[in-house]
Every structure is written in C-alpha cells, then in structure tokens.
Amino acid sequence: MKSLEELKAIREKNQGEINLRSGHEVQTGSKYRLHVLVCGGTGCTSSGSQKIREKLVEEIKKNGLEEEVAVVKTGCFGLCALGPIMIVYPEGAFYAMVKEEDIPEIVSEHLLKGNVVERLLYDETVKGNNEILPLQETQFYKKQHRVALRNCGAINPENIEEYIGTRGYEALGTVLTTKKPEEVIQIILDSGLRGRGGAGFPTGLKWKFAAANQADQKYVCCNADEGDPGAFMDRSVLEGDPHVVLEAMAIAGYAIGASQGYIYVRAEYPIAVERLNIAIGQAREYGLLGKNIFDTGFDFDIELRLGAGAFVCGEETALMTSIEGNRGEPRPRPPFPALKGLFQKPTILNNVETLANIPQIILNGAGWFADMGTEKSKGTKVFALGGKVKNTGLVEIPMGTTLREIVEEIGGGIPGGKKFKAAQTGGPSGGCIPAEHFDVPIDYDNLIAIGSMMGSGGLIVMDEDTCMVDIAKFFLEFTVDESCGKCTPCRIGTRRMLEILEKITNGQGTMEDLDKLEDLAAHLKSNSLCALGQTAPNPVLSTLRYFKDEYIAHIVDKKCPAGVCKALLSYKIDADKCKGCTLCARTCPNDAITGSVREPHVINQDKCVKCGACMEKCRFGAIYKE
Image 1 (spheres, helix red, strand yellow):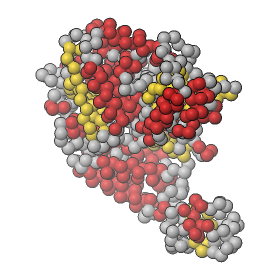
Image 2 (image 1 turned 120 degrees about the vertical axis):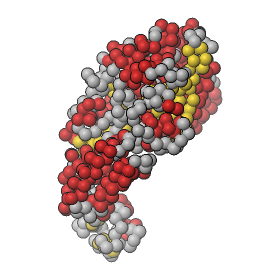
Image 3 (image 1 turned 90 degrees about the horizontal axis):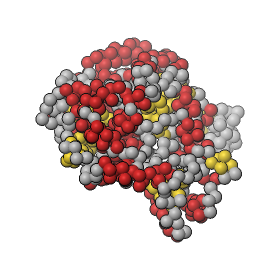
Image 4 (image 1 turned 90 degrees about the vertical axis):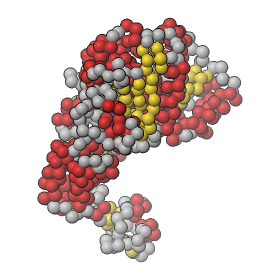
C-alpha cells in the first residue's frame, strides 16, 4: 500500500516529465531532452498510429537517441480529423496526418538536428522560419478550457505514475484524511456540478440522497455506455485518463458510504476496456483500490461490466438491471436508485464526464468550478463536434459559450463556403438548433428553452444541403431500433411516427400527418416509461418548430428543398453544358441515359433509380438534381 508520502514522492519524480509537455520553455527535472507524444485513441489507432509509434521507436534506436527521446502513447488530443497525430515537446511541434514513410525524416531532421519538418505541421501552428505557434493559441484550442480532458493527450494512460505526476489520487487522499463524508458532499453541492450524461441533475444532491439512506451495502456506478450517434466524449476520457474515473468513484464511495463500484462500459470500446483493466490493476497494486485505502479504514473496489451496445442501457435503471445480469429494461420510478438501485440497494450513477470533474473540484475548491460557466450551469462541457464542420473532434468549453463560437471559431467553419443551417445536440433525445439561435449561450436551460437539450454532448453540425425531415427520420429510425419494447407508447408510438415520416419523405404525406405527428409526440412524452420514449419525439418536434416549411414542401410541392429525399428527386441534363462524352451513360447502372457521341444526352425518368452516379462522374457540371 502506498502512503500519502510515497504518493508525493512519485509525483515529484514524474513532475519534470509532465512539465516538459507543457508547451512552454524547457522545464528542469526531465530525464529526456524530448518527448514525442503519439495519439493512441481510437480515431488515430484506426488510422495506423500503432504502426507509426513502432516505426518511431525503431528509427530512434537506429539513430542512437533512446536515452534522449521518450516516446509516449497518449489518449486523444481532440483534433480527430487530423490523425494520426504526433506532438514533439518542448517545442510543441504538432505533426498531423503522419505516415510511416514520414518517420525517418522527422527523426533525422527534428529529433536529431532540431529542424522542424514544416510540411508535416498542422497548418494553424506554422509561423515560418522554423517557428511554431503554441497549440494553445490556435483557433481550435484557445477558447477551450480543459478540465475533464485535462490529461487526455498529455499523459500515458497506461502508467499510473504519470497520472500521479499530475496530482492524481491527491484528491482521494485529501478527502480520506481531512474531510468527513458530508463535507465532501457539500463541496460538490457548492460547486454547482450537474450531471453531464443528459438530464443535468445536481450531482451533489444525488450523492446527498444516497448518503441519507441507511443500508448494509451501497454502490457507485459509472455510466460509460455512451450510445448517442456521433458521441465519443466518455470513450476518449476512458482511453486517455482512466484513473480519474477510478479516483472519482472512490471519492463518491466515501461520500455516500459505499464500498463497491461498477463501471458499465460498452464492449465496442476495446481500447477503453483494456486501459480500464490496466488502471484498475495498477490502482489495486498501489493500494488505491481495495482494503484500508491510505490506512484510513476505508474499503472500496471497482469491477467492469460490459454492455452489448443497447442505447436504452444509458437509462440508469436499465443500466443497473443489465449489471444484475438481466435484460436491460428500465424500471418504474419511484423508488429512485438513491433508495433502491443496484441489487435493490442505495446507488448513485454518474457518467464518465461528470466523474472526471470531481478530483479537480476537490483540489481547487467549489468556488473555482462555480466561477466557470453560467449562473445555473457551472463549469465546462465536452462536446463531440461532428458533421459539416472543418475541425471535427473533441472540444471542452465553458458553459455559456455560443454555438457560433463553437462552429465558426473552434470548429473552423463549414467547408465549401456552405451556410450553417442547424446543429443537433443531445442526439436522439435532443433537438435541432436553427441559425436564428446561433448566438444563444449553450447551457442546460437555454437549450431546453429552444427545444433541444444538452444530452451527453454530441454536437452534429448541418449545412444547407441537409434535409431536416430526413434528419428527424434518421433519429426516429435509431430510437425505433433501440426501444426495449417494454412499454407500449414507446414500442408502438415511435414506430407510427417513423411510418408517417417515411410517408412524407416518399412524397405521399398529407397535411393531416403533421397533426398526427404532434399528437403522437405528446402521447409518447407523457406516457413512456423511461427517457428514451419520453424524448424520442424531440428531433421531430424541433424540426417541425423551426423547419415546418420543409415538411410542407415535401407534402404540398412534392419537393425536397435540400435535394436529399430520393423519391422526390429527379436528375436532369443541361443540354447547353453536355458535351456528349457518354461517361454518364456508361456509368448509369440502369441504362437510363441515352444519347449519341458529342450530342446532348437525356435521362429517362421512368428508368432512373436516382443513385446520383451520373452527376458524380460528370466532368462538365451538366447534370443537376431538382
């Protein structure tokens, strides 16, 4: 078992290595001259970062630099579209889209001779004359404030001593040796931290309810089952900083009187699962999980439970039912989990991002956290930024940042000069934010007021080429597939809503269908057993609220204004632009295009399957859709 004094010694030993990665001037105390950080998150791993790291180690040995250069496998840096990513410190040279064949040049020029390979740098960091703009000053990073993500991309997540070097487990030692459980709960209450998993319930209040209920056993659960389309915030924290979740769960266990924790993580996250297992093993070895932690008499241990990817298991009672070994279905509430949760014992459930804030709140104080954000939404929020935006990836911004700042400044704007149309937050449970609310500060209450919700943090950007009826249909298809079927309103109601949307996008809708959609939505919201069914109509309601003209165009004009819905499209050839090259005719899979060489071609609308292959192949812009 490690004592607080031993923990302090480990922290001091690793401080120099951590400081070297600060991106500022060279810090003293590092064993190495340079640190090369290679992203080992899912995104970069899928792009081949493992092979790049192996090639890097090979080249470093070949050049005799093993004693001077450390290669560090990290979690996600955030700029996922630029992977594989490699950063060299202390210069902070950010190499993007690195290939194996680039490694010898980086090693021989940069690591050996000190000459940055400018052609491989992320373009926003290039100043010229071998000068580099610090990453923190680029458009993507300068408005971010990383709390939950503070260690992601900065430490080796498989090395507990690097986590300790960032003051890891110091918060746990502080609460166990200097604070009573009720004092810990009060700190979380005073911080204003609200659940980052979707509903935004005050975290301290949840802990207080569970602490007040007496039982021979209590549980702390972590929801790492993140199932929203396009969301990967929790996965990235688990891959880049797994120990922060373990430490926070132990703090929560002490606060409510629990001795056992469970992390419910989806099996589709193999890297996260592997690193959690490594972290749990290391924490047990160091005496930071298990019996008599820090010689205080406090016992707490953690086990993993793998989920099969059911979206409904993001609902707390369904998640607990699954941990118990049963089919993941929600239970009626009350009683709430704080009274009867896992195995009918008092239980608290927090998601990964919520827990990732806990140690920093303990170390820096409730006021530090409460000073960030807005009056009712404190702190920061992590978003998985995706869709029609230049800089896709992970961003962490103070609550109250506007959507415009996220999309245009951090996200780099919409490619191709297209106009912003809407952003979907909260996934299938959320709604679309239209351009008229582009400058609304993002927090829990503002999003609800405009018909959306925070959700877990997926943020999908849409441009003018997006059909909002099709978007609503997409999310309804998802919830229909993911409904557990336990309650009739959700099982049947979502299916009926989807059928109406399919009818509209096929050009067979009527104006009465819009009234039916709203009636069904009201019934689902008021009668479904859990939040999956209660929130399933939100994408439909928000698109009806802000883009009703598109629904009307589909119904009355039999047109899809964005040119997305195939049944309402027709491809045509502009005779003035057509050169008669015959490429479109040769490409068409259904022989729907006819015409002679060097003569304008014609599309037979009865035979056209509307695949768009002709338009894609045309080199003269002669084919268009309407």
